[in-house]
Length: 366
Image: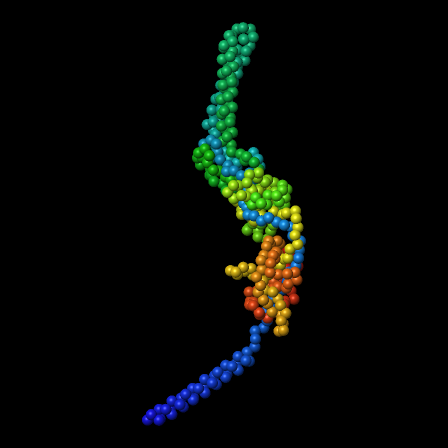
């Protein structure tokens, strides 16, 4: 019985071992016959040297040349609204009228009293020349006339203050009042901003003060228009250094004729220096990012063809789609400019005859 069991066990081991060996052989054959993946197709570019102006970088906020919230000085009920939200208005243009019917009626009464005072004064003046009235009566009539003139002027001023006008030319915001609404003194009616030209306020460390001058060129970009640069000039350099941050406040002015910039926008600012430097640059599409820093895929020639190797680089400022290479590459190094997502270190590649989309002439012309 034991003999039979041992024989069956040996036969089972032989059968299963043969099957395992056959399967292992088939897998090895399949792996040896499997073709290696084809090389990745990428766009390539070379490190070039260009002349760039030195720049000082900062961040700032856009500020209106003039900006107010239009309010009323005297209480009243809104009678007429003469503007629409977002409208461009001129200095002195009538925006809103408060009801002034009662004031106008009172003014008519004051004008009648003034007329009577004027007649009494004229009469006393004639009689005074003939010594028919005393000097005190003459002075009293003159004072009464002056008082009536002052009352009429005061009432006219009140009526005029109920006519709300634009303090300067600019662009209105959103209307905050309605017809028939009672306004207390100082109620918010609408915002008025003069945005052409417009200011950009920013700060730079005091060590850069010697590199700053009036009329110096500045360029700024905003998130609303990421691919556009706006040009302006430095118009004010504060004479006071902030003791907490040791920085100097600077204001530049931009024409903003197309009204694309608005007060309150965040902006990245570059102050252009009068000096120029030779710098190494690459298209910004060639730079990849990871938690350890910036890197590029450098193209190298191997015995099997072209391959890529990742290399850490230190980058500087960015201008018009190109980025400064401070460290990690030399002039003429060839790197991948598009298609990095599918790459890994040591991978074989084929260079596309066309450059990266960002470097094609038809794209640059747009």
